[in-house]
Image (cartoon, rainbow, N blue to C red; front, top):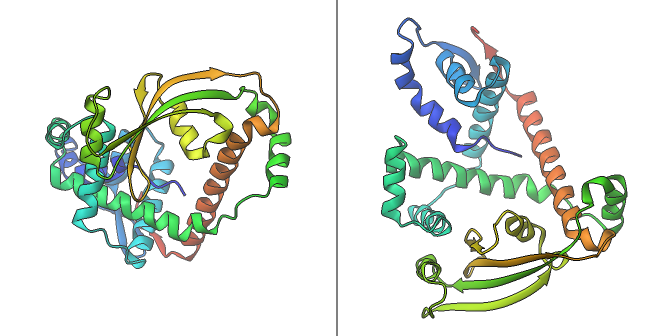
Amino acid sequence: MKFLPIVLTQITLATFSLTNLHAGVIDAIAIDVNGEPITTLEIQAVQQKLNMSKDGAIEALIKDRLEKSAIENAEINIEEREIDEKITQIATSRAMSKEQMQTMLTQKGLTWQSYREQLSNEMKKEIFYRKFIASTIEQPSEHDLKLYYETHKEQFKAPASMISLVAYSASSPEKLQEALKNPDASTQGVKKENLLLGSNELAPQLLSIIDKTPQNAFTQTIHTGNDYISYLVKSKTSTTQSGFESVKNAVLAQWMEEQRAKSGGDFYNRLKKDAKIKVIRL
């Protein structure tokens, strides 16, 4: 299920300032979703910010209200410590300090507290998705993947690659960030390992991250549960491999993405079917 990005929360928070931009417009409740209001200015704000049609903005806001209600009912709690760890992880992946992040957010007109609240909401969505949606998706069999590959062959023409990496791992994001700032130096508490792997040897999620990372750059920081890892992508060399086995991980990644979208859509449709939605004015 693809949740609405943080920007939608920013739009909702920014509704008050929009009042000044629409001096002649009176904000009013347009739609009631299970007792949660959607206002006329919220609809206008989403239209303008996300360049959506009015119908698209309304659908997005209804989805937002239903998701929030479902997450609240699931009673998912995020501790302040977890938010701090997430912020450190984001800062590390961008090679920024906490202070630099605060400066950047201030320049964008976002307070540190509101950012933490938005981040907490996003973390709740991630947990909710894993617990109630992703967990319902069964892993495909080899036969399923081969059938999917044969049906979508045109999308998997890219050759496999040999990828040269240097893995940097540490028990804390602070130590890892210290090492990434000076990768050639030896940093106490940070392990370095040279790797040469075929793209078909990598987990689909990791392969996707590496594919999006330029050569001679670090991937985003990945928290494995015990350690924090970032990979320096030294090179990506195409090979002459072809056929299902050479693109198996890419097939699995695309199959899973489609299943996530389908499961998310089905879940939202069930929420909407059971919801009490009252249109007051549009």
